[in-house]
Image (cartoon, rainbow, N blue to C red):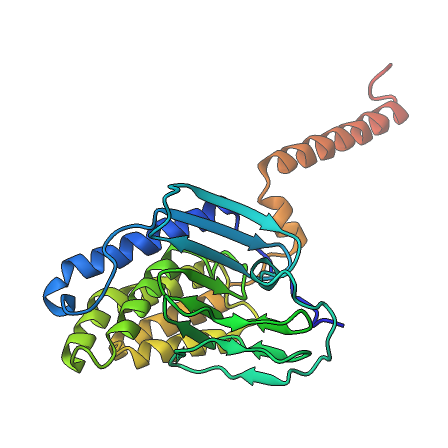
Length: 304
């Protein structure tokens, strides 16, 4: 069988995917324009795509496919009932062994690839979560035969053409993540082109604040509930991006405070609902009144 997909909670909606796209291109362009003195020698796009196609898989994954040279100025957003890979490679086989022939492991740095990967018949390639593949604009990522299988649980980027993620969650496609993805793309494209001081300046100004905002947002949404490892990973990413110890200590304290909030029991939840409280007290009052009247009648204190 094809690897079982984990349908994620809080699947991104079409309007939210559009918000991600708008924020990504806005952030990307703003960073380029505001730092043109550092980046003017690099071949960056400084305009929005003419056409954007957004696709959300209800099973797993989502993508943005966009074009700067399209004569058709139109944006389309849709949903499909297959994994996201089938949108790009509909001829792909749906049956395979459960173990891949080739796997691409998670890594802090993206895999920058310069040529198309030709898939052999019956081959199964798996891109693990937190692994990112980046291809140039003019290079198609994969040449796939009808018997081949591609499973992308990480990220696939074709510069100026495609952003594909194996996750379809709101968190993976949030506007906060859009800004982080935009600055990451610029930093990746700038590698070996600008010096470390300039890179650190861009990180401090454009990436670090959004990494902190993402952690705060995740704390508020209980994203880390039963997922301590993700919080530790996010903190380590802050450290890798030169966060100060003060920020890290504060976030740890916020995280621990949030973890210590006791989950209300069923009675506490009911007490929090005013209309139920009113109903309960009305019922209790009526019952007590009936009991008192019955006693008074029994001892002939009152008459019917």
